Image (cartoon, rainbow over all chains, first blue to last red; front, side, top):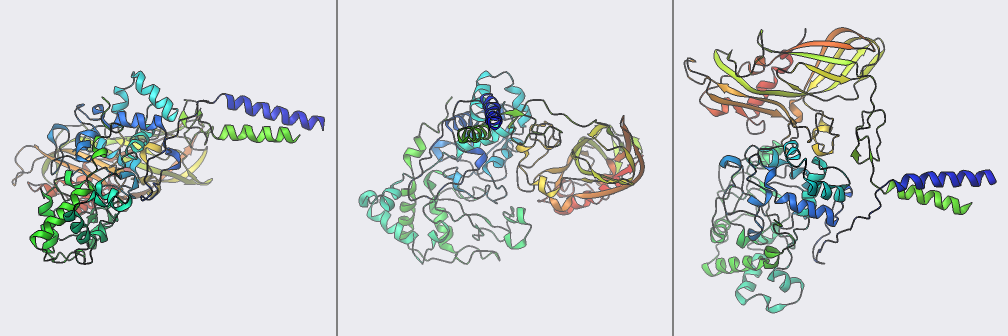
Length: 340
Length: 263
């Protein structure tokens, strides 16, 4: 019995000794401000949110050293005042290189099950690497960036605090994803009206537009489903008979996916012009007119896209409603703005 | 005694929930699955297996920015590299798959150490051009820095997109004139990958693996990879990122097996 006692005592001490070699500072967990009417956000177990992770992610998101000529950061093409989009059909990369598609909004991006207009990337962690490598965007490498910050004491301190490691691809990609998960937009006038019982948050015209948006005739909400205003499905909306960009088919190689793109959220849509995967439409009026027309009848076109025969008043009402999805506090939130 | 038991379990709990440095390379002898950051402590079995890849342009030695003929057209390479993976050896002592199966083959660079091959006699070996479908869809940021697949590797090739790694990168300039009497001044670009285009290859070779070093010499003809192409003013004949021009990518890949030979 005495021997047993000693064994446990020794074992215990050894474990304690080993444990004491570890970093003891507890990371400060970060509680996302997800409203009750939103779904839960799934966050990888290996990359749970902490203040330190979000902080270094924020620095990286606005870091031009991630691009070949140190001219472009994530925030260059994803501007907060435009709900993290840019007012260009296609954003420009290093040396003015033309990208592939319209920069999508990052509002509520942490809820998305996959990324890019074609859904070709399954995690935010992987997504954050693509613009760095892409010759049409930052045209650089993580290794190149690591060399640039080799002697940067602040990055070293931040990565040690966030991931208990030196700056590397793992930490960089996890940190950017962490920061982006804090992009929650849920305080529009629509939210006040719909979920917080503030009945005068919408005008009469906006209410008419709302009724139309959710109606069986217009069917807008069958794809742009609240509360996130997307169902994340891939749809062909009959923009062209021949799509220059095959969309989802680029990933699936299936002809029935030709011209299908991920349904985008319409939250903050007032500020995310130009519209469509290629930025081909400048105004919301044009977009509404397209859906009113019923599309060009592409073989893969969604059955939901039918001529709507809306009158001028109804079209204006719809546009007015769409603008109630603008979230002013999201656009000016200093927690997610450029810290530099 | 219960007190100690509690202490024991508590200690274990503290241990498992903390971050620590160690060897994060799964191919190392002292791989520590609980380690989160590499501390340079990895220990490997004797690194006795060396591959020598002699880069060629047809029968000539490979050189960048040097003209050679493909289907009568002048071409010159500015970048040429590919992933090789899944190195496996067969012989009297059975099958052995290398624990470090990834290699980034760069034109003009000949010597590669592939780690440990047990002492014995082998008669065949095989590898793939490309990356196996599991690793191809693994986050490049999650590999140990020592891996050719790691995003920390300055040469690593990945689309940052679901198709995964770019297995082959061939870039250069080509003469696109109709009479093929011009200069190689139009760019060609082959960025080729996707699971479907991995090429599995096998070679016969008597290998007597020794503890102090085993060398395998192969030739790889980069020019051969462009066989059958007719690169003209039409960009689609000389540019593919695989999914946007699958047939051209597949044509290039059909040449891969023939580009490798045991020296």
